[in-house]
Image (cartoon, rainbow, N blue to C red; front, top):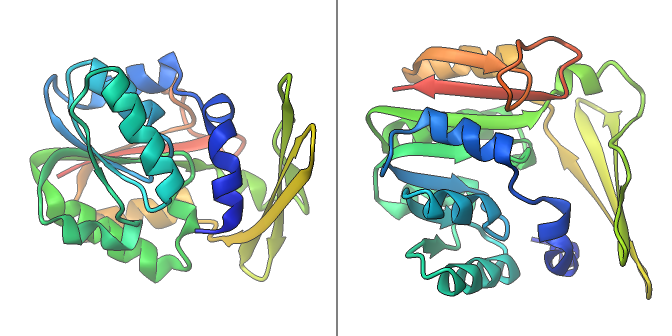
Length: 236
């Protein structure tokens, strides 16, 4: 991970809080008390919320400053959450199986290419128990790719502002984030792979998943090219 993610960590909870629609959606996917793997857990907001709801959580997050936050929150709330420093590519090293796996917050797009995404999907399939489910949520890249530039709404708080911009570039998306606080401006640019609904649906079927449901948000609105997000549930 880059130094920028270390800088981002103190602000992460305000930028990316767990929300009721997200938690309600995930809870509707997995039976009560299921064992769940959160891939790219960030500072653990979603894992903590699901842990409080009675699920058994393993949180995989390669950024050390964020894993520290997850552990602090779990201890504060007296939750047993297993925190692992594994990246998406490293989840097979957990040597465990789960009732459910979720990879949300546009985490999947941080993989370098479609082959890496295919490898992750197959690993997720192999790590699921029978009738287990995989949930994926990304930005709707079909919508992003229609524009030369695409910006999210500005996040403005009392102590900082956070800007996100997307720009198509040679079959990738240049993703620029700018964090401005009272003392400094921190900027970071990375390349994302703009994986689409059709690509994911086809590859999930190739991996052996079935009963694939596609939505445009956590409220389970029908997906369209103008949807803000791509949300997929796939069953083993």
